[in-house]
Length: 214
Image (cartoon, rainbow, N blue to C red; front, side, top):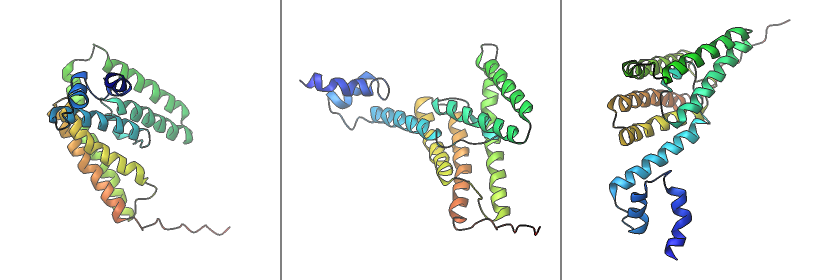
């Protein structure tokens, strides 16, 4: 009976959230304080949460460089290049937008192919840090200059901040890559700055522009 009861739960958790040995450790032997398996469960759960959150929080131009790995990067990348195309389209630059999509797709194919050396991939990964810093600091400077955060979505800002914090843990747990973990430490600091500005300017509103008399 116990084995039958475990069946649906095991199919739900293995291998999406847990390897089979950790499932047995936690739910068969009931060793609920087994730290290595709990870390795996937390990491996988955070990863799925980040993927879900990424569907609600698209970034903009510079963060396209930050879409380097993991599941949520696919959704962020698709959202970002779509926004870039729409910006060009509504500026009357549809041809330029199509060319941007074509070039982006071509570069992506080359980077994902065996033609690209690992050193180049590592260099591009390292370039995430200045890209994130520049993008967020430009936004922060604009907010400070305007005295408000304009139409920034609170949901998007806090999802990005929470997601970058979670990615510090998941990158350490899943990859052990110090470069990737460092990238998300920097990203968390920058996203935290924007989140702090959003709270500071919470009640500030853009001044209404008076219509010119006809």
